Image (cartoon, rainbow over all chains, first blue to last red; front, side, top):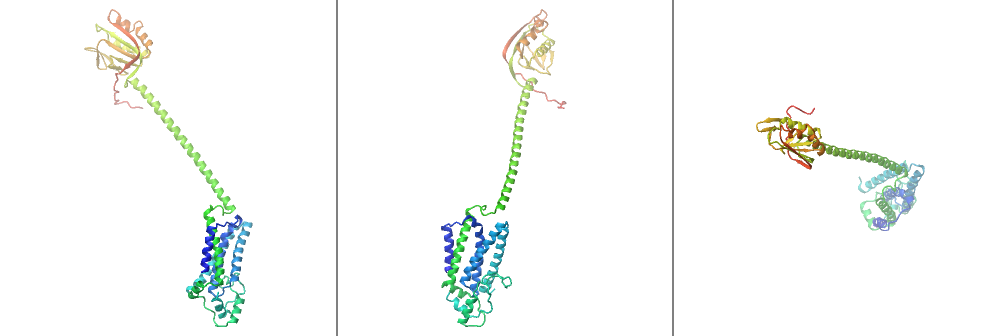
Length: 110
Length: 294
């Protein structure tokens, strides 16, 4: 319940308060979002497998987001930012799908 | 998470105990982080030894129960989801608000600029080409208009020359009074030739016969016949041309006036200069059966 409330609240805040990110950070927001999605799926899977821990979850979420952004930032600095961001998205996408498959197996036994 | 922790401790955790917390291990079967906490698991296991086999995953009933009665885990989830929702909303808004150029990288922008520049050059060349075509078409239209006007002018000239159109202009009116009917076709023809020699442009006899290239003169029973029409006295000749020259062409010694007024013919000739001689007589152009434009 809190989860849904939190999601809706976050979207509402984003829409009505119209926060703006510094221009320098804007290219990394999509990557950060994908990393956050990955962490969310991983956390939900851990919960279903009864191995969830909130501290680990928060740390993993934060570090995933930061590392993803950092990789892309480094890539931008050395001139392969587009390729590295693609690589990050691909890797995170694979992880999301794997986690989703585990969640599906746990919930639907299929 | 009130339900979570007792269950967590209620079962053995021996099967899955990755020491790593959330880092990806390539040798793991799933290749992803488990987000578990082995220390806590061990502690729970020690506290409440309940079962020996691995716990089954959370089923739907538990999920719904956890969802309705939120624990700490869900609070954390909510916080993360809030941040995620915020980020997604910001991203979506900025994507919808800005053009897609702001998020593009410099190399892409340079490429885009190059593309636009070359496209612009191509379009400018096309514009120049089309302008040239337009100019050509306009000059073509102009020259066509000029040609049409020239053709019309020539048509007018030829219509006067050929006698197919009425004409007017300065000229003279000649009336030959010939009571004795002694004027011959030869005299009339000579007069016409003299008038032509003096620059006569349009000649009509008795306002009915337009003198053209094919006009012929002959003697008939009722007098002179010109182009199948009998010329009755008095013979009037309307001429368009320079009046003085035309008058002189008739008055010279041996010309019309002297021929008519001598004692052999015994007639009189009156010559009136008229700044506006109108000639309505026309000929219908014969349709050539044999001659074709070469």
